Length: 314
Ligand SMILES: *[C@@H]1O[C@H](CO)[C@@H](O)[C@H](O)[C@H]1NC(C)=O
Ligand SMILES: *[C@@H]1O[C@H](CO)[C@@H](O)[C@H](O)[C@H]1NC(C)=O
Ligand SMILES: *[C@@H]1O[C@H](CO)[C@@H](O)[C@H](O)[C@H]1NC(C)=O
Ligand SMILES: *[C@@H]1O[C@H](CO)[C@@H](O)[C@H](O)[C@H]1NC(C)=O
Ligand SMILES: *[C@@H]1O[C@H](CO)[C@@H](O)[C@H](O)[C@H]1NC(C)=O
Ligand SMILES: *[C@@H]1O[C@H](CO)[C@@H](O)[C@H](O)[C@H]1NC(C)=O
Ligand SMILES: *[C@@H]1O[C@H](CO)[C@@H](O)[C@H](O)[C@H]1NC(C)=O
Ligand SMILES: *[C@@H]1O[C@H](CO)[C@@H](O)[C@H](O)[C@H]1NC(C)=O
Ligand SMILES: *[C@@H]1O[C@H](CO)[C@@H](O)[C@H](O)[C@H]1NC(C)=O
Image 1: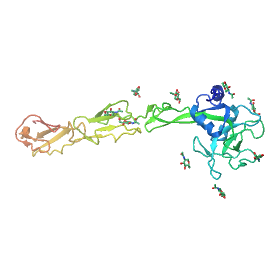
Image 2: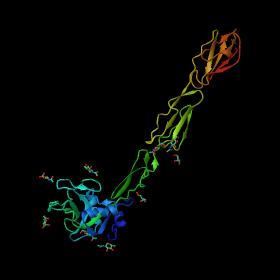
Image 3: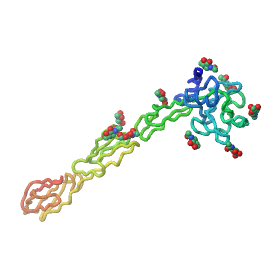
């Protein structure tokens, strides 16, 4: 039966490192145990044995551990299985060892089986340095508690260090908790057309549909969808004018046009007229692209293909 647990790492110590964010926290046992037992203790009550990734973390860790005048000190989470293996941090599978990490003349593997590591917390010159030790020795456990959890980052991966916790967002999301979907660039209406969007503010999965005004032809895709990375599925289509063929002058006559959208295009209106002594006949049978106005009689206006004929009698 294990003694009650106590967390001595107080929050104000921790917050002194940083004002606004909190990463993982350190905790230690108030009784000693073997290294294997220490790992079990950490994994049971916290996240794992402490991992030190740089000198700053090492300094910080030492600063929060109680000073001790002699052995036993504290187990840290670095070990190796055999003499010729590299030292590995069990919490992260990383292998960081600083230039100044080991105490003088360490690691010495004095007993040939010193495959675990303690950290000195005395007041001497070896303060904060490491020493290899036989794993069966009893020391205090130092653990860390991760602050990342499954809800830390809405749509991303939570990352933390001792002084920081942050989110690496999935594609399509941003914000400190990845809570905001990346928007696609706002779309404007095409010239001579309009658009309607559905499914939100031009974010993931919202769709915009395009239509062209009467007499204009849509070139491109009539609908685009905003993808997860904030990019539209295609370019905005354009609206081209539908041009009718050029009109011929009637024999013994001529024509002129009013072209609001370009020559012989949507809503272009053309008038035929005849030379003196002639009048227009049969204009009702005319199609725009096949106009054969005859200058004999006279008739009224005609509409086809969105281009208008008007006859005039002069
Ligand atoms: C550890 O701390 C608990 C709670 O404060 C206490 O009851 C227990 O005696 C302590 N154990 C040792 C070995 O100091
Ligand atoms: C470790 O390495 C030394 C020297 O390279 C070698 O003599 C020894 O046999 C190795 N020991 C093991 C357990 O591999
Ligand atoms: C740890 O790292 C070593 C070397 O990079 C790799 O071979 C091993 O599979 C890793 N172990 C785990 C549990 O990730
Ligand atoms: C090696 O271990 C022996 C036995 O524990 C001890 O007497 C000796 O001082 C150690 N030597 C070093 C350099 O730590
Ligand atoms: C522990 O020792 C260090 C180095 O001598 C000292 O700066 C620190 O104030 C000590 N901490 C406590 C709680 O006594
Ligand atoms: C998860 O972590 C966040 C900080 O990243 C914290 O605000 C939240 O309370 C935690 N939720 C749970 C259920 O532990
Ligand atoms: C949509 O965008 C507008 C302007 O950018 C903003 O005011 C509005 O709150 C947004 N609506 C939603 C549901 O995100
Ligand atoms: C995505 O759009 C489709 C079609 O508009 C809709 O059925 C679906 O529910 C949308 N999904 C999300 C997650 O908004
Ligand atoms: C984007 O929307 C699609 C369709 O609804 C959905 O399957 C997908 O999970 C969404 N992606 C993200 C990152 O939310």
